[in-house]
Length: 289
Image 1: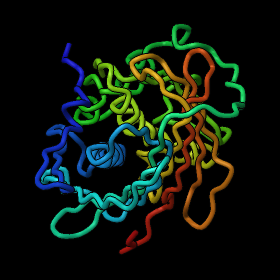
Image 2: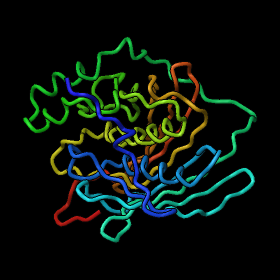
Image 3: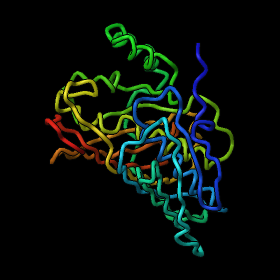
């Protein structure tokens, strides 16, 4: 069996200047850069300019499709270093054009009031079929290239509560729950656990907004792309352990789907919240996003 991709290596950056960094994409990736990759690398670039503070939120826009064959340059703006909070803006650039930008806020660790929403009551990951078992029937009928791509071990292991979320046979309710974790060891740096969770937070989001509409990623003519993405980190966690990613889509309109996500650890602690809006529409002749 192939060795799972190490996201620490995939997301690693080369420092070019004080606030400039360069990253690359995995050689076996899809035709465009996965959105979670540029989220994770941008957050990592921001962390390279921050000391002794932890990210509590990030907000970002996907501007142009990224080319996985071209390195990405990350330009970090040190917006503010305050007494408690630090703010950074990161612009990801290819061929002299912005493909993505991110704003992130970092905070000195402190105590405060606490409350949270409860974790949904769903079967645990040990009670569900493995990702390979969930994909087995789908892969039997898949084209050879898709079978090759989907059968290799992905860096994020996922177990969907109600079956494979990427090949929805809908219509289904506009909500979804998936257990996920990083396969390769992340280590003890809490920043990297955030970075890799941010990478994984882009997975499966738009498919939740598609569930009521009898469409899936492979539906002919479907056009989909992430438009913006926001994430709040509530508590530290170990992303080598299973986390529940519960998502719901309260709205789809205007060719866009809006999705909310809550990430819980095995103890039931809400460790992060996510929102995303994305393009989901049937392609028109000569349509441009």
